[in-house]
Amino acid sequence: MARGAGAAGLSDELLESFCLIGPMSRCSERIASYRSAGVDLPILMPAIGPKAASDIVEQFGNA
Image (cartoon, rainbow, N blue to C red; front, side, top):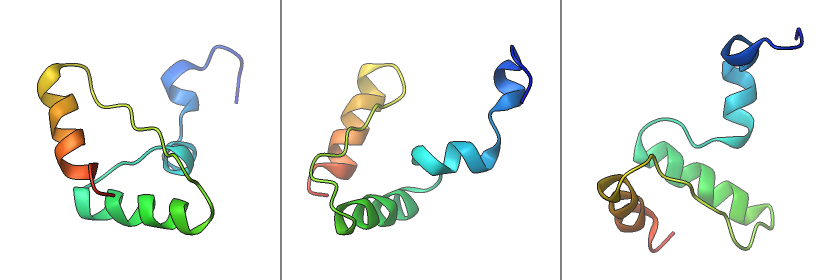
C-alpha cells in the first residue's frame, strides 16, 4: 500500500478483519465468535447520530 493511499488502501479484507459489516444477523455471529475467542468487552461504534446509536443498543444490547 502506498503512503497516502487513503480510502484506496482500505481493502474489503482489511475492513472485514476488524469491522462488523453487513446484516445484523452476520454482525451478531461475528460478535459471538469474538466472545468465543475470549473477547470480554467488544466496543461498538455506531454511525454518527442518535438513531444509529439507539439501533446499535437495541440490536446488540443482549449480545
